[in-house]
Image (cartoon, rainbow, N blue to C red):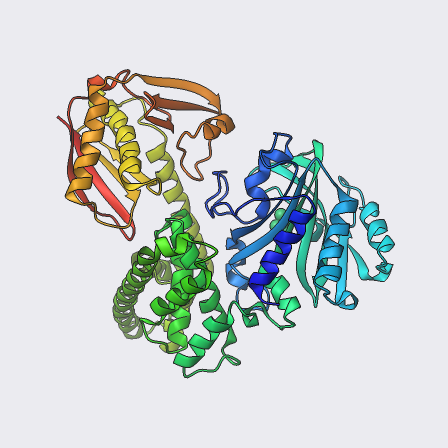
Length: 570
Ligand code: GLY
């Protein structure tokens, strides 16, 4: 059965069983403590906690997911970064018996998958959570012999929470050929930010079944990369590479997986950068480019392959068509940027290795390797390859790792400083520019669309600087529109209101927040009239008329997919 039929069969099956079918949510989750959506339950998190669900108590979906934790695993038979997750969910409705029976009916009656080959796991119990005897009994009642039901620990059979806190619970899983295909989670606990488990007010069910893995079993393939969805992509690589799939399957698979992941990430308005989601995108694109080189494929190959991915998915995910131009340009630009970085890095490497051989030194230190990484974004992997080619060793990789950790800490501290408000010494001019920054942020979203996300902000008493995600140079007309919109708000003399509220409430009220910033439980929200609302430490002016005239003095690029505006108040 084709993958698209499987997806539809799953949704039809659960619809007939009284579930409301809910469309996939974005890959960018509402929960700012989570980088990317990695499970179907994320968009339903609060309904597990007892908030009334607008969809009713039983829902099902096919959710776009991206699992950064699996990037390094890609290349084996079953791991993917981007995947579609089929799931059925109960918010205080059915529990273990019905969830297991539904899974059994769908897999073995509806799809007629080979029951003989299936294996099952349940939670084996530990100090905090007891053995899941009930699930064992239910499987046995369905005719599964006890020797096919394995008891496992926390690592394997306990799921959640996503983010810093949330619902979680023991699981029962269905495996085929050693690959986990369906994970059924019994949400009975709330895990708080200190990792303490408390019973939930209502019990729920959250299941996750990777569509590609299901297709692999249903189509009797040995890896997810051989299913119908990937076939055209693998074939396309085969056509253009002199190296065959069999021996080079890892690089084939990396390209196939990562190009698909990259297409979906870019379609969500994510652009390559050195932080957060942009960094994930840059990382998978660079790994793709590396594999492309190893398979001796042309530079423009990835570009055309991305077109094939869009072709395959565009009827199910229309956002791919509407952002096609962006997707292709980003991939092309990143490849170009990477090529330049590598060339520069190789040049530098040559100089370095000459110096080393003159000095009679056959190694570089981890710190030196890190400096190559820092200035030219050449990964440790690539440095290792260059080193091998020229017979030079990297002496202490630990040194590299240490330097890398320090670098991350420094960037994190920098980000906190930037986002953490202006501090005590702020001059009145800087305070005004800060309020103007909020107006600018919202005006940009109005004129260019909600994809505009703040990437950075810097204020000094002379000017404001604002970096945001946007893929094109702004036109004169757009700049004027933004400027006019800000000046109109200034003229209207809108009141700037400061409120304290729980963080969750702030998010619900659609206040803009910075991704991954660690917010305290109570946050300050600044709103300007009905126009702008942001979680922010302040300070701000009381009324917009205090600002004077707002003027954009420069709009320029600040990295791939990021624009920078400098503006002043006259
Ligand atoms: N939420 C269950 C899973 O993704 O496996």
